[in-house]
Image 1: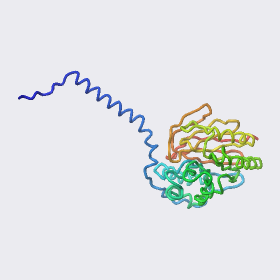
Image 2 (image 1 turned 60 degrees about the vertical axis):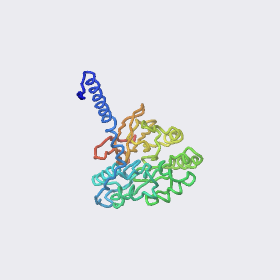
Image 3 (image 1 turned 30 degrees about the vertical axis):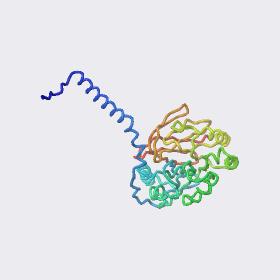
Image 4 (image 1 turned 135 degrees about the vertical axis):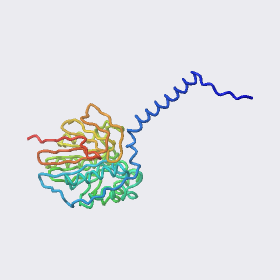
Length: 325
């Protein structure tokens, strides 16, 4: 019996070529679609904490000037969070700041009680050692591991080292008064909402600060994957307009976005402290970027200048609010 060698016909070549073409096309699609998003998953990859000693209390705060940083959704403890924390330390060396406003979700993949060291102490250690203080706006992941009825008390207990005074309060930092709000459903749009809103109206109406800044987790305006928190917008926006809030800082969506001024208020989403999601754009959008970032704000009585800083130190966006005289 004689075995015949297989005959490769034009049809075979066609199917082989088609298969190779499909494989190559599929590979290119994977590269084009998946590769740009690989950074999204770097929050699961371990990273090295910043290894730098910062000059303690190198900043200055007066009634007329102050500098602070803004960081949102930073709580993975992974490489992305470490890269941002490292750049925050380098930025401190160039532009010292004595305050960081945290926009929520400072611990993913477990409670802050269990992950406090890896999501807070390790990445932000150089700033803590330099004496920088932190203010926290409660995020949805702060509420994830405790019942809603007990959430506020539990959050305060667990993160008391952060300096939280509760889930809503205000702090004066030079010419800026920052109103830290709790935008969770129990506390802003639920049964507990009236108490916080009554406090906010009283605090805003009595504020004499040149700049009024609100900081909380859920964005009233966002073109990201989770989108605008319309219920939060409906209850807060009228107060912001009535009492002249200048700037609203939020997280939750994992990108950077700044709106055009809306009734005199500029809204910013700064939720890319460790994770990334696709960034869109809307008719209210001035700038929208899908990149890791934090913010630096420099305030005087006449101007409030902010810049969004990437993990590599690149300036993603910069804008200045000026008081009309």
